[in-house]
Length: 534
Image (cartoon, rainbow, N blue to C red):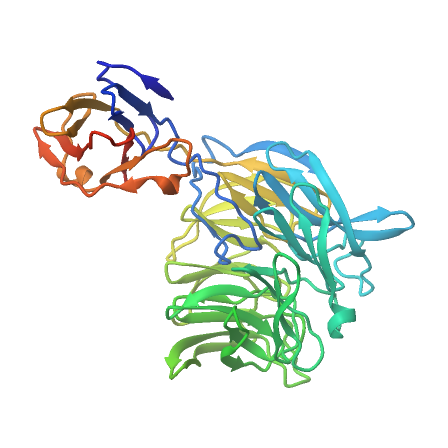
């Protein structure tokens, strides 16, 4: 809201870290601006598998009083077979599903309106054929679309990498990895999602010798680099910063392989005696430690299931990875990737009779275990564990390593829910093999004090003075003042980046904050705002 008002000296703002602003122009008129933006009104996207940080965590505030204020269904829509998860970005929710197209089943990328569930578009991509039987008659694509700006990137079950327009579903470019790189489709087909990192899209294409790990440029799909001969698994790679260096960690048939995303050069390796393709859980990076696990133990071969944690340390110009601990045929993650929170792993462990467990990352010691979830999944949302069951329950759990404490549960879906949900802007986007739903669990934005602005123009010294106080008369304290910045811009029509922080020395007097900003006679009008940091 923008008003010209000489003499009006009382303004207030609610629910915002941005309070009021005021400024004189060079003609002496006084202009004030009020900003009524809620503190959490900026929707937090969930643009890739396991979220914006590739770690299964969301900072979106959610409420935990589910008994008093249960989760609320916003929409529910039917959806074709598939084990794909959701990505949410730009007001749209994207997933993959199997549908009939003419005489054959095909994998479609489907875009829904995130607010209403209305289908916006559906683009056919590849054949939908699962000859191994998969999970049953409701089998379907397992990969999750990745979204970056106005583009959506998809890797199909039969290794077609496609880039679509997010608004329309129009094909921008696509790569048939089987034809171009001699890629081999593994049993159960591909379940790994494409990883968007910087200006590149990275995948394990399982191609010819030294053409397995591939990076493509986002705008046109041209090849940026290729290399290595590490056979693919079902696990999606994870991007993380380890010891100050950005890297992408693949869980390949050979073990863990970390590369520099810009060049593909190998930073470190750790061989594992797994040898199979049925590895679905992504690597979990926590500081300088990387956790990996797979199921399917075998007593008839050299292959081993179980879990391992390695510690990554600088070694000359590269890194070395040394085992911290390992558990042979224990702590097996069959399908879903655990999450790391405060030094512990929370996830679904086991081969068939899966349990939700809390495991100490430093030692691999189990702290507690609870059954009844099946092939569910685990996220961290607003500092709580969000667990799902294989039959559509959402369960909120206190991340207490000493005991399992359930905060609430809600039956969200019917059908088989073997995938991980997405959390965006206080809403959970969750799907089964037959339907999808959007569930509201938004937390209450914290109230902050009403503020009173007292702008005053001084012609004697060519300065603009402003004082800031609580409208209820309570004094500002030194702790609050330390979080307050004053910013200025010459135009409200520009982006937030145009606001520059003023180098001023505010003075706290009688519970009010006072500051002065120099004003040159020929200077264009400037807008000021006061921002309190969390």
